Length: 160
Image: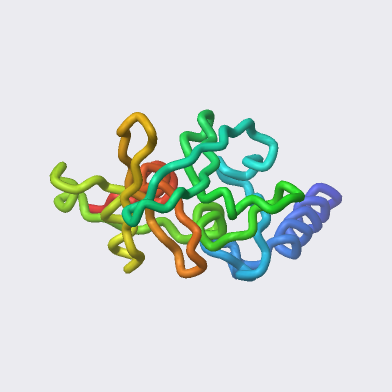
């Protein structure tokens, strides 16, 4: 009898701690909050980064932060003076739903990250650096940019 009571009490505690899945799926819970979450980019604020300058399509210089361990390039404007991220690009990278891309669409003609950005209906920006390397980035409504390689690595879900 005591064992059955303990099992029942344990089950009730477990159920009361669970919210039935409401609000636990991918995607932002509150768009104004940019918590680190629990994914691979959760501790990005404490990761080492490099400051980079790239040249945009119209010749303007664009400041970026590159996180080599996470292989992520994002607009420097995304990181506040306090070290917290405050832009739509990072909000999506941490909390947005992965974008579904059909396996048959991954034919090698266009990078998978570009396909993710196109599926989100966001503009694609091409930049180059002082040694001639090029990168393509996805631009979010607030003007923040994230490299399409990061979208491919962190925000793409391949479907059949």
